[in-house]
Image 1 (spheres, one colour):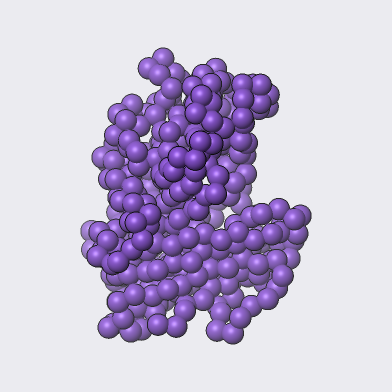
Image 2 (cartoon, rainbow, N blue to C red):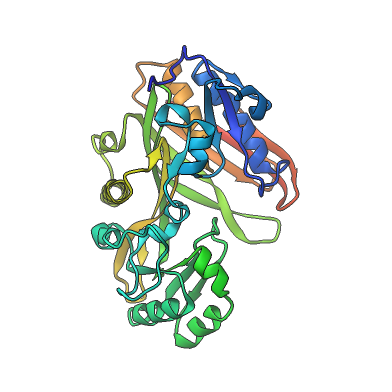
Length: 368
């Protein structure tokens, strides 16, 4: 299929999920970023995708979640030229459960599960298991607790929600009792080694038309109106190309290891599920210490959709497009509950969100 480039004639549409708040800060930010994607490929933004993309018209989609193959087929998405995001053959492939294998051969697994992937990932991920029943969760937790506290994460939740650190068998059993069989069967959960003094890295790559970038960086936390530590943005170093191009730059040892773990994770997942189509991928990698002071690092999960770092990704592509001789861009995203915005920032949302209260989201390209 012909790739949509700067002169391509198509309509760019943000495809919203029905369960998401159409007036929330995410929806507002995604609409703004989708308009900028349309400008990058020389096309127009669809105010009403149902009309503008009907009757066989060429359309480039920006889904707010990873699509299933049957959804993509219904929209006419046939390959990388048709979307900013990802398409997977099974719903669980878009969740954090693919980061680990099952606790044993008798464990419950969804249809389409790759039993080889968990072993192939090796030390690209933390010690852990994916589970789809309460009994498997208890067995996985007990096996890991011998090496220190473990973190239990509901696979369908994001941003640190649906997580609990347990230190012993009693806490594990108490937490397992709060999880319904229906939830575990439908979504699954992850049980993995908990780390302290941890840093979370963001490593990713993206393609929009003829523009291809890769990046590495770190995430920041901030304090919301409830006094809780939440995601506060990402600081990225962006280069032209793909993951391999990141390793041509001088990097600290821990960052280089994180990038190599992402390359392995990405390659093994694509080998296990060859029907995946991805043009935007962001991987969270954590590095920190276990209870005994041993250092671990590993990929936590993937994001194959427009996400929290995408404002920086798009700003970096715009900066590289404006300066063809520029080899590297440093760009950041910010989410702040104080309302303060520096000069030169691109504001994506400023107002009151029904879920989190007053919030400002913006991005910034740093001087070369």
